[in-house]
Length: 164
Image 1 (cartoon, one colour):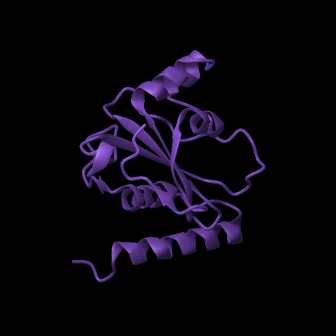
Image 2: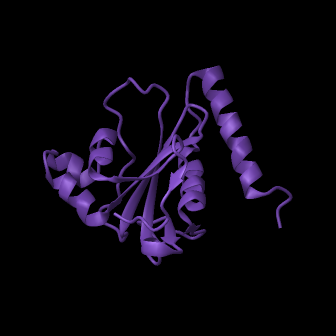
């Protein structure tokens, strides 16, 4: 058993990542781990220690129960800056839905979006060059457009049964 709780460790990682960015101007590459922790806590997901490829967690309850969920995180340092992308989507691997965790400059969750695999694949077919589709590349704006917001810090809403 570890001396520190995972929650305390993630809290300290948030603080260090934000301080590192302010000191160096460069992000510390831990947003995906923080996003996975936040998605699991907010949406009642079980994070997998050994990832079989394609997904990071399994839903534990409601409409997500048993679903294989790929989790992506994106830190927004400048909300006015356009052209931001979500991380590479694993389109050639197994997963049922994609959760995107939007983090603020302090690595705190702001919003969570979710879309079923079919919706994501359809969006990749539309208006995206073959190279981007093959790489599983999608803009943040496009994903927010096709996905459903399932949690927001502003309203502290969580609908654990909401599935895309």
